[in-house]
Length: 424
Ligand code: PLP
Image 1 (tube, rainbow, N blue to C red):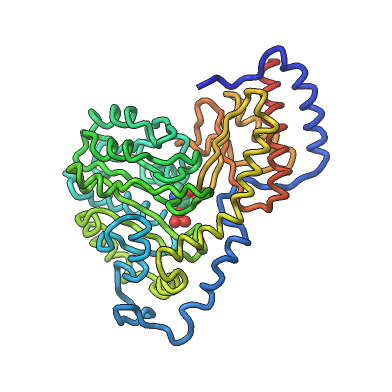
Image 2 (cartoon, helix red, strand yellow):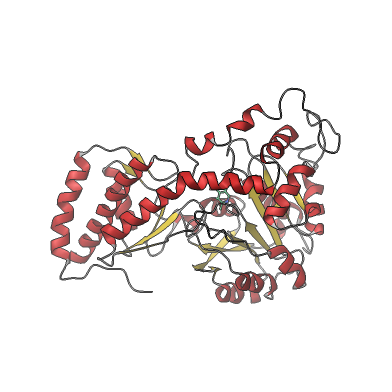
């Protein structure tokens, strides 16, 4: 990869021009925010039909149970069937839960810490040390769950096809304290990469020193396409089974960025042994999920095609915002060699790399000019980006007009920080 830096002979001219541009930017008194990976109100409106569902008098599930009552730990089969098709997993191996897949991930690791997983010789919490492999840049909340549970994190680089499989395989082969790996297989947060079938096959079949090694396969953006190229996620659970490691993969997903993040439905899929294990522990926590919410989601979508067409409406709202981010970065920074960015085909983020050592400067310059960016280091474990170069941009929430202004301002800050670095 080429090193990002401003050409020394260009630096004084860029510095003078961008100091002026930055003074003008600050004078505008902006208050803009590119930090939050949330759907916009316009996107939430797409699911307002849910607010009238399942409708007065509609209380029976397909199986004839009263959804208002306790029970049904697996979640409603009519909704699980829709998402089993979308996630390419058997219905019997998919459970539907509450509104946050993060809860399922946290509980998986908490149960593992307290009780161990199938294949463990003791609870993870009784091991001297437990480590997880974290591809970087990655999702800050994955890292936060590990940190909260005392799981040490070791990093590997991301590639265009997901986590670098050679780096992962080398780490896990000899170290039995490495119990797992985070993967966001489709349109990763933040770099938008998609795990190829080849990489998936390697990850599910590589030898691991830990017999109870797990891949937490967080397919949060499985159906969140931004182009006509609607990629199909690799079938990690099927591949793991074929490789003789049926219990290695635990998949997660949710409707958070399909319907309402505050009141959606989460999903978890894995081998029969893992699902039985999970439900055994879940049963002490809950008598059953919110089935009224699950029923209204099932009625709202109808079938898997209903979800796909709903996501195309999301795309109509957000694809222009991503296009604006990318075209402004290209126009303002393309010729200077000071930044590299992703052009994602789906998901919620654009990952921007700037001149090493300047990401925190860019973020503080932007902040002073009234543009909030995700804190430096947020995409790395312990908030520590060793090269201080990565910035996560989240363009879905603000209106297009604000994104254009904010991104132009970000470009000014990137150039100014690069010029400062080049001129010492
Ligand atoms: N996983 C990834 C990769 C995410 O980016 C997010 C939200 O940004 C989540 C999970 C959160 O999912 P949920 O709302 O289902 O807890």
